[in-house]
Image (cartoon, rainbow, N blue to C red; front, side):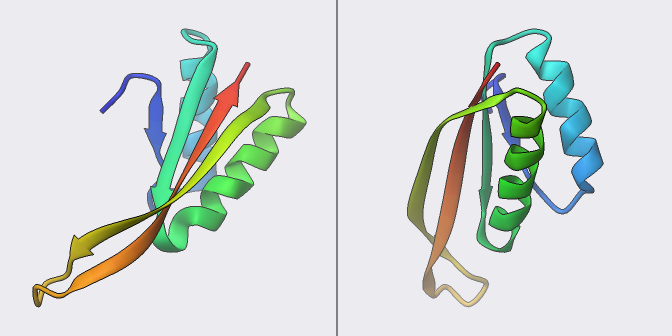
Length: 85
């Protein structure tokens, strides 16, 4: 995993905000990554940070394939949100 990357999972929003603020003390650009049902959480985090003066530089929406437990291929949306201090 890249050092300037935060993968959004099922933890609370406050934890991610704390981690991101901490990482911005070391870097000027950061990427939020997530997929599936957690995309709305990543978007919310980006909006909160934007209100604090951090810019949303770029967003990418990607469909990625993965195999489920039964071996069937499924498409899952992924989002990358590039943030800039």
